[in-house]
Image (cartoon, rainbow, N blue to C red; front, top):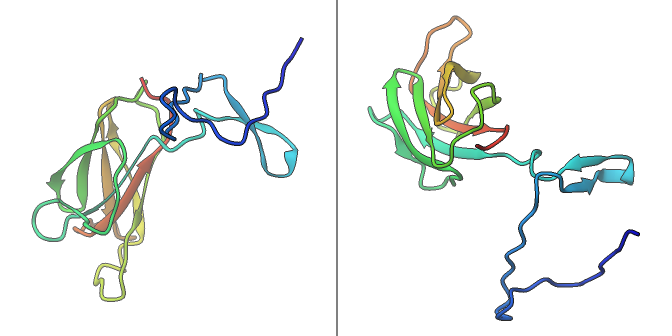
Length: 149
């Protein structure tokens, strides 16, 4: 027999208002329009960060935010190694980048952003390249999806 629990708010045992809900990897949610379901845990972004490589070293963009990012390392022009706080389950996860422009950014001619070929369970390369193939330091937004270890 299946059950349904209807509540307005979930709080911790102490009643402090916080919630400590743990969801199994089999948890699902109903998609927009009610036409299908998705796995809640697998559909989440597992890492994101914004960083600026233009000053000769990688700095965390103070206006940006990070999640599951322990650090970034300047590897070479246009390439940053993104180090993860929590490892991924395998090396075949999708990592993606996008330029982070403001109106004065001179690197707008570097529209091709992507993950490099070096993905490990604990890090990946974020790469900025020109359509002609050259790379240049810029400001990037980076994220990945997949299964955590």
